[in-house]
Image (cartoon, rainbow, N blue to C red; front, side, top):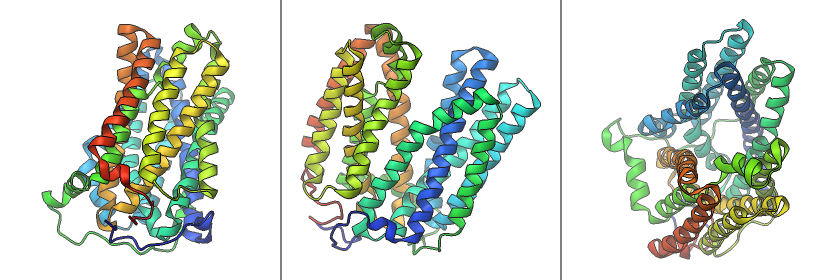
Length: 414
């Protein structure tokens, strides 16, 4: 069935850059993502320096994730009811204030980490609002025929920030503990300026009055639209089972015996594969059989996870991780495009809020699953069984969601 919200269209290789609003958006997101990754690594090092308690590192992630879960019924509705560009700008101002708070905390020499957790909680609240608004803004900035290209470039910049941001933050923290927060503040302010220069886009805002029915409309739409439900839940369970990031320190020290430099290499490898694929997709997008391609690459992600889990060679492990990242990028590209295109603009913010909670849950719970499994059966067993579970999920989901498997084009056409 053709999605009535999306007109039929062709494909372009770099059409997203024809639209000034998207270019400004892309560089604003690049600045924001760099800032988030810089803050993430710096605050982790700083808190651990102050307390020497690994539990505090878990609290850092928890206080930033909980707001997205608690506020899911509000953040999506706000993105659908109000100007998404303005929400994005205001949230980046909020992120900048949080970076300023961390900068001042560091400069004063305080050792009370409760203050840091409070700032990070505020940071999590702001990020809970910016996520649905920013994700839903892209389809308002480019036409349907350029949306896949825009998502590919957006994913590329996110991966670049994921690789380079932590490295830059770590280097700056070594120079001066306050330096990474100062740079993050600067980047966020630059991003605010770029967002403010975007012309107000056409957006179908939520007209109905605030109500429980309006608040849960995102959940109801996801449940009703099986392509969207299949795409979101596939990511949840595939990452929940196949995620191996939390166990990389164990592999670096005990399995591969490569030390800290090897850990850095292992952490960077998936993002390198993802960047290569995102660049490829920006010029050669998936044109047909998108659903089938999605399931193939989720299966490959699980397969390469198994290979990584069994490997005792550092170069085989790195190669497997690169291919894991590449496979995941194919599936992310297809999933995100299907979700954005298949969702009507009036409910897109609420659906993206649901999607973000599922993504956060898969990552956080995936790390918890990996840690518990490793404690019970060892790191190798945890990774291998998790990879096998991902392969099984791909097979089961292809049967449970035949419409997703049969989806052909990424612009909503049959």
